[in-house]
Image (cartoon, rainbow, N blue to C red; front, top):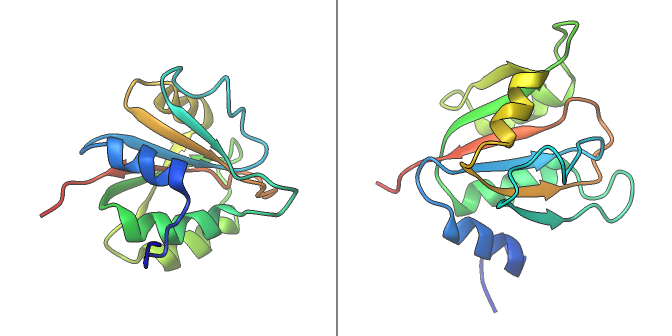
Length: 138
């Protein structure tokens, strides 16, 4: 038994096989989990029902498992700031500022070969997607 905040075996495996510069997508329930990810990326379904599991609930244990050097979000077309971003900024802290990408640029980044894993959540908030870049272990 692991004494660790992250216990999900497929997610642990996917994160363990990702290296420095790899990308981890934690996607909301509206995201096209199969068509807007690279074909070699592992897709892990944690979307049990609407609202369960949320991006926030995945983010915290993932941060305990991997170093993160950058965080990108999907910027709404109207340039508004989604409510979810406030929660993410609090969890990530000032050393990991959110870097918004236009929607199509976000999709392109998630279809790139650097995407190692996509975690599908039941988070129903719009624009709640996070694209983490794995950092190096110091």
